[in-house]
Amino acid sequence: MKQLDLPHTAKAPRNLDDVVAKMLPLIPISEGKLREKLQRIADDAGYIPPEGQYRSWRRASDVLFNAFGGEEPTDGWRRQVLDVFMGRL
Image (cartoon, rainbow, N blue to C red; front, side, top):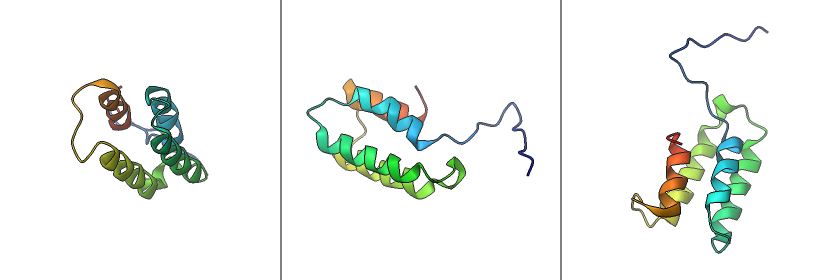
């Protein structure tokens, strides 16, 4: 099966494994439960191609939303993590 090339203006789907790998160093060690949950979600998503990882992304989004108290962080490590998750970093 031939893979289609993406136009220059289209972004390829991001792999949740890669995103979590970028986020984990930003999360303090003291936030062990958050780190574990995100790693578990990424491990489960590792067997799914990026195009089919919708549920895994949703689970990760819910974990971050709950960890951040339902508020969008404006600074600190939480903001950096959110920026990576949203593709802004």
